[in-house]
Length: 601
Image (tube, rainbow, N blue to C red):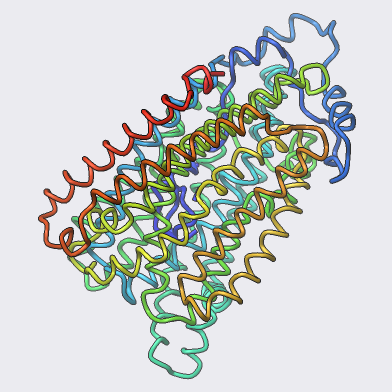
């Protein structure tokens, strides 16, 4: 329910952005006909403690086997289960990606409206800051750690228990998580000046010294007090999305963020411009969008017969298992978010506009992340969770290998295409109103640095699911901690010579550190090794992507020409380059031997 630097995301994605990203509602989900047919009961690790970092495959297999219900389990019990739809992975991913794409388009329109209204100055810096903080917590409690912990437990319950037990798990999970997040939201509102001082220390120092940037601190504190309640509503929306996804409904959670974006578009275009302080109006619009998203999903929960009254259940066995997995995963799935918060603190010491430049460039990264990486990771987690890794290790490897191939086939051309067309993309999307040519150039610098880590960020989304399916959340935590430390070191080294560009580059480098660790540990434990076929596949995709990027850069005119074009002309010109580049990439892939069968599952 990604995805931060932010305004309410199209992505909820988003946080790299300050926005609540659309990825939020498309959290985790999907069953697969092929895998489900091979593994009737959910095959996930059941031990309360995740495998040790050096545990061999046998430990993971034994843990997975222990979760298998008795073969002679009464048939009557199965009849009481809430039915779960069965889908093929590729089809499920396409449904989720298509719905998310629609949401991302609306999110882009929202960002265009905000850029036109606020530009990339003081007001924009403050607004994006006030959105980034609650979105960081959203990533933790909504689509991130909670979804990865809740989905495997809920999937197991839906397969092994009856409807009453399933409803009890949902009720206790909603009540426990809801109350905790409500308390956090209230604390965030009351202590908004303290939170602002922590994450915007440069502005706080300016406030203490009565410097020119002092206004940023007071405005950010006020906006943060308004936006924090969004966390409560989006968290409950994420829980509903997980329930729908586990029961085979992918489109509804994926399009839910559309309602947030529509709300923000209406506010930004038609309401905020009529007020003296449009920032406050946008902040209230963000909270309203969160409420609308939750209301939209409730009828579909009722249709499944799973509408329950939330209850406190801290000691409920299912909730205990969820929080056992979730607590360490709070760090494991949010390394990029923590890295962005570190960037925010350092950016508060830099010139006005730095946070805005990082936000706008990050929003563009959230587009491929939210459409491709989130969709693939969404459908792959339940599929992996249903595989008995001891008896069906080959199926587990093939499923994860499929995810790696597909996410890089989409990520490589996305990254290289953005690098080649970074200025034209920013010009077409944002350059109007308060957003000037200079803002485009400055944002393009941070975009170049950020997009260099796009494939690594997308790959992490898939690899983490390989551990989550085994209910091992500790390993991703360790990897994330190392990545966070690396990011901080990169920041301190690069921020002074490269300014805000160094912050963007640090996040990209940290993503590679994170992905490299995950791959190494999967290989070391004999859980998953990248096959020679997949390595060859990636090499072919990379060659095709380079050919595409060189071609579109060659045919793209200088930025001065782009700046002089009318908006309509620039849109058509950019669309032609993108379509031409995509066709060239596809032709190169075919010429190098890539076929549709290589991405079927």
